[in-house]
Amino acid sequence: MLAQRYPDARCELDFTDAFTLLVATVLSAQTTDVRVNATTPELFARYPGPAELAAADPDELEAILKPLGFFRAKAKAVTGLSRALVEQFGGTVPRRLDQLVTLPGVGRKTANVVLGNAYGVPGITTDTHVLRLSRRLGYTTSEDPLVVERELGALLPRRDWTMACHRLIFHGRRTCHARRPACGACPLVRLCPSAGIGETDPVRAAALLKG
Image 1 (cartoon, one colour):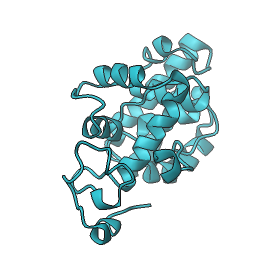
Image 2 (tube, one colour):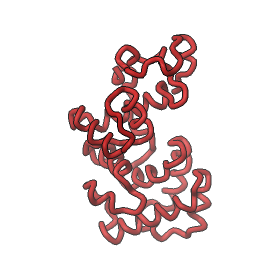
Image 3 (cartoon, helix red, strand yellow):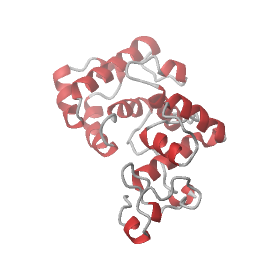
């Protein structure tokens, strides 16, 4: 049903390769993909690869990243991971999760975003929407990302992991909101054990839809 509702589900961060996706994903913490997409063109025009970003002037980099919030920490994170890419992986983003998570600021969630979208390696992305919807839909009762990743992976064919997460994220952003889900306009309402926690009137629920 979510496949029919969101036929265009995809990673909403703009990227051209594994490196730009990795950096964009790290920058997306505590901000929106829209804001990241507005910032990364200038960032990658000035620092197109790991070597350039690793050598970036901190003040210049922070000025570019300032609209994203937490810009000092984010500047440190992306220069650190770029330096590690150059020193440990010859400037190439690795294709293995166990190697990706050794990079500064890169956890399993970020690693799975890169693997699934840049390299076509299936992965479960346990972002806030996936975690919330997995509990609401009864796929898990856990709030632990590692547990949710494991339990979702057991429910879904491996080939579907990446796209299933895209659809859950789209649904979480557009319909199944954290504070007031649009239950009356949800295609899963008859199957969802949490149906009714949000707006059930179809007209009022439709007004809550985003995107």
